[in-house]
Length: 152
Image (tube, rainbow, N blue to C red; front, side, top):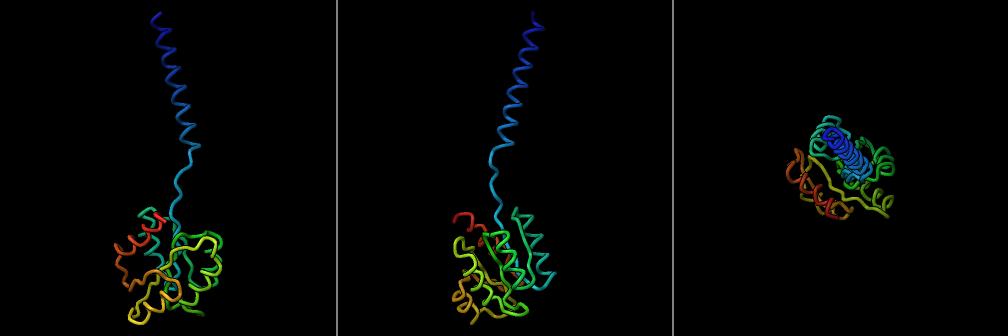
């Protein structure tokens, strides 16, 4: 009799484990914050990608304005980090194009540049960029900027 009781107890525990497994498998997992890094310097792009992925962000890279527009449409990033000095059109012009293309779900955008921020900061804000980060980038400040996108 004791054997039958312990077998039925074991079966009941297995049923509970199976129900919990199904519950957690079908539960909606939180979506990672999507970050698009636009920089024509592969070393900078890959470094940012590696660091941001270590922090748990999903990162997509683009090296030109056409790539950035294509990737922004494909991935709908929450945050876009733009180099100011891009081949073809500059990051400020690209920011305006991205704002037009993504009006329904506008991402937060920030400029990245090795140039002095004195005049660029005003121009960047005029182009719809919320922040300006001078290279080499202060990662704590950049991570704080990206983390605020979760709150919006």
